[in-house]
Structure formats: structure tokens, C-alpha cells
Length: 302
Image (cartoon, rainbow, N blue to C red; front, side, top):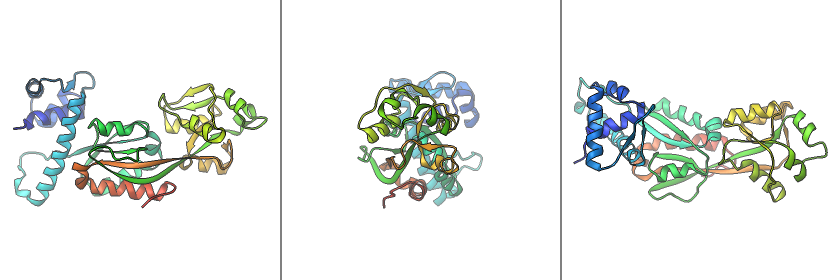
């Protein structure tokens, strides 16, 4: 028999980040929450929560949190059909759905999908952000119920839906172009011109150079871990970067940015992968994601 009070305590500690806040949500004392978590950890023989500020889940703790999300979805559906089951003195806990998306999707189209979903659903959304090449790992590890990913092969236990491609254009300010590409955009010039890089996982600038020239030379980089920061840094002439067309088209049309090579685009196909067990109860979220993506991305499928 599963210890649901213990599971609920683990889930709330992770969601709120502390034992005190979880206790407030459950209307019990922090020591009661601590005892529930400790008993469950002792029963399972493993640590579920890394104590800190904030508290976070271990890998096994993440599994239990995702299970509780699915339980919450099932209970919400049951309460809708059988409202008499609800205890009148107990506030109904709203379900939080954890999903993963890449930063550029979050900065261009994904929040519009979340907004469309939030208009129709009482559920809350917790978005984990990672590179599109790595969000699939969050699904494999059971840390999210669904993810925007570059992986077109279904992850074990998941359904995959093609969304379309996020189009990138290599851009820089007119001043940057004048300083670094006086004789045109060439491999030697790219080897000296600073680019912008999101983090160690970001290969977009290298991929653009490989697509344009067949190779990616070693070159100086500025580290800017923000999608909007990329655009701002480009406008300020700090470096060149591959930016989503959805974010820079207005700047290009106004002449505030220039393409390094007109017509040289980099299209990144994106897919929505959703846990099969939860898929039926995530229909509204999936619909919002698919409809929004296919209205804004290039080469939509379906």
C-alpha cells in the first residue's frame, strides 16, 4: 500500500522548496511534514529530498513527484464526476504539471500555448528549461510529464508529435558588421569575430557556420544565458548570434540588425513528447502546444 500522506509531503516540499511552506499547504506542523518524509525515506531505503534552500528532489524523489501529479490529475477527474467525494473542510489542492522546454521556445511561442491552456484549465504549470537537445533527458529520468524536444524518436513510454521548426537567422548590428566583416563574412573573419553563446550545450552558432561553410572555426565567444539577452547583445554590437526569426524579424526590417548571410537559415525541428500514462489527461495542454506551435513555427506538420 502506498503511503500517500508521505508522497504528498514529498511532493509539496519539492514544489514549495521548504518544509515550512509544505506544512502551511497541508495545515500541519513542519515537524509532521518532516516525519512523513523521513518515514517514507526509511521505508524505501533512499533519500528523496536534498535538504537545502530550496529543498530539491533526488532522482527517485522526482519519480514520486511525477506519480503524485498523475494521481492529482486522476483525482481531479474523479471529483468532477463525483463531487460528493470531496471533503468540504479540505481545500482542494491544485495540480501542478511539470514540463520541459528549450529557452528559445519559451522566449518565442511556448508561453502562448501555456496561456491558451491556462484559460481552460485549473492546473498550474512548472516549466523546466534546458537545451532542446537535452529536454528529452528530463522525460527519460521521469522529471517531467512532457517536453518540447529536438528528438523525433519516441522516448520509451512516450508519444511524440511533430510541431514544426524554429527558424534561426545569424544576425549582428550594422556597426558590428562594419567592424568585423569589412571584406564579407568569411571563415577567417568568423574565426576572429566574437559570437554569443547561451551555455556549454549551445551549438547553434557552430551549426550555422557548419551549414554555411562546412566547418566551424574556433572563435571568441561571449556567454549570455538569456534568449532576450541574445537579441539585446546583438543590437548593442557585442557579438553575432543565431537568433529565432520570431524575435528578430522586426529588428531586421527596421535595419537595427543585419543578416550575416541573407537567406542562410538554420531550421531546428521540434517535437512534443508526452508520457503515455498521462497523455489522456494532458489532452488540453497537448492541443494548446500543438496548435500554437503549428501557427508560429515554419514547416508545420500534421
